[in-house]
Image (tube, rainbow, N blue to C red):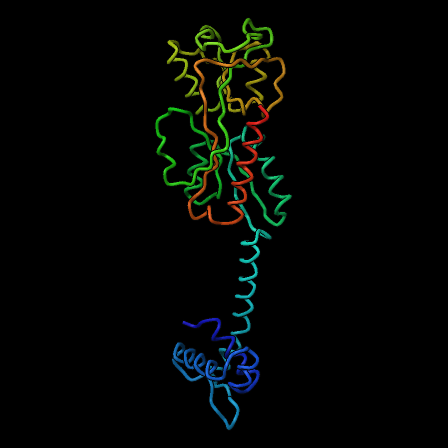
Amino acid sequence: MIEARHLRVLRAVASTGSFSAAGRELGCTQPAVSQQMKALESSVGTPLLVRTGREMRLTQAGEALVRHAAGIIAGLTAAEEEVAAIAGLRAGRVRLVSFPSGSSTLVPTALAALRAAHPGTRVFLEEAEPPNSVELLREGDCDVALAFRYEGAAGAEEWDDLVVRPLLTDRLVALVPDGHRLARTEGSVAIGELARESWIAGCPRCRGQLVEVCEGAGFSPRIDFATDDYPAVVGLVGASLGVAVLPQLAVESVRPRGVRTVALEPAVRREIVALTLPDLAQVPAVAATLDELARAGARQSAAR
């Protein structure tokens, strides 16, 4: 196996014509140069230098190796500089996957701070709901995934193989039309008081949580509309076509017009997290992204 340090010594010997001159150029002793040249010849299995008087002459194999050494060393130098830039956050790439309400609330704040602190780090954003976003992470198609899970839900161990960075706790709230009988209720409302309403359901995972909560209160919701688009949910509620339950973060991601939010009992919360793989957590750009997402989550919580 050819080592880069041996190639650098070979080039120095070829350019200076002797071990002692090469040693002076490289800042090492003549015996050290001789030892490294013997190691290189042993690696390639053929002589590379022939002594002619006080100077060294390259063999045909030596000439071939020196000819290739320039490109190899240049490539290694470029690689070292690029890796150093990534390690120092002067460069780098992070592929981030987020669910929609996270993309419009936590992500912009985090990425703006990241760009200000590390302008050489580029972040590419795609949207996907969990569990799809988590699978993208495990399959190597992203570096960081924003995800959520509801308190008390089954499958808490599903992230055991991942690095989990908590961001904030998000509570579900009810959305009712501005003229609804519960619109100006102070305090919390039992979800059973909405049992006879028409319902507008959100994303599949939120929809499943809605059905579970309602059934726990003794009724099955009559879902007239279902959409993954949060502004559409708000618009349908605002048009008095039904009521809905959405995470607070989803409500904050749109401009709710014609609707009121009402706190629900029993309280239902979901944990918002950033996920990555253990090895990726050691990459400086990924670690910096996780830090900024955590700060964005803390600011979002403090603003409520």
